[in-house]
Image (cartoon, rainbow, N blue to C red; front, side, top):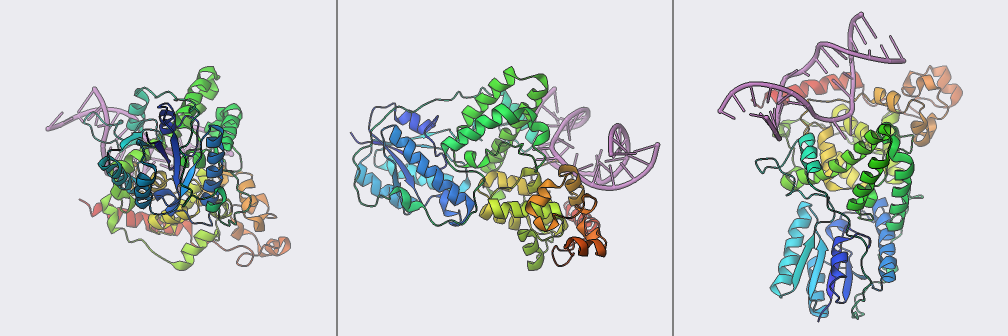
Length: 475
DNA sequence: TTTTGAGTTGTTCGA
DNA sequence: GTCGAACAACTCAAA
């Protein structure tokens, strides 16, 4: 009897892993497989934080599989070609893998399924990435939800799948030695200074337990303050599947039961964020065109601007708006950005600079270590007012956001060091410093730190006119 | 079919 | 500085 292939993609863990759990219960040898050139890895820049995270997660996966008695097989090459080769080489009994919902993955996976099925090999796919799949959360009419709250209500009514638990020990069938990569071969030179979040299952659990015991109770307020370590930072771990979403949800429910009243609201808020992740997965699944186009079609007429100078200022964190600049520099330096800052920089690019949200979305794809296409697309379309959010136009005031969410300017000063000596009174608007003060503290506007690249009041008024014009055209 | 009510994360203004 | 209302006024799920 041939082995069972368990194909790992965005689910780099051994604990509570649907496909691995089920495969190790059959009693056949199991070949855990990772193909380096998947839909996941192809888009990751090799010098980016996400790639670094991935290699760490993979190295640990290899170790954890070994502890279960198995051996990770890593192959490089086109996915379909790799599977064709393995079909001959291993003559597997079956292939198991967890489902992925991105449009490109769906297309790829159906080809893989067909390949194995045609050869009489059993194919089993599993729900693993989400608590509830896009096909499970539908309106009464069987249509997809496009407003969050009704989606969340329907989601909460469904009974949640319990964690499966540990995989059994297994053996890996003797592998042909050719074409198998060593552990280090996927590793490339990376130049990310001390990643804030190390990849892998162990780190995922460490961070999660710390968040559960010390942070989740104050999540509702602290999550909005970029200078405070108040968010879970689980996004990269979820992106690469270093932790099980079923387990996280179960932990939240247990914590909720034993929590004080005040903390319960915070835990519910956190669960809502997990539901947002599933909501945007569902939206993209049902409307794959959103990767390229506006949900609200009338925005196809939006006369987005483009300026190399302004776009570069945004990318580099040199807009003259300290909070925006802090966010962008955090992204560039660490591969991660606080959620509050993500909203502010996205609003700034789309509303103040009036640049197409797709430009911002691709820059995030390039830089974020937690890049999840569904969430990224949903977030950017939300910011640009082109998406499924039913609220009317929303323009963030970057100055106000700065004062409200970074009142002590700790975040700004951490990532925009040239503002370190600017007094509290001026730190959210350094260009207002009198020239003498600029000179005194060695932060001259236009030299050490830029003047605002646009005037918020003027450009937001302009944006409002464009918005009204675009929308009224519709009827 | 029509009606009703609610909507992640905002901003501004005036008391 | 804080608070509530006005802003704008649209979509869409569900009754």
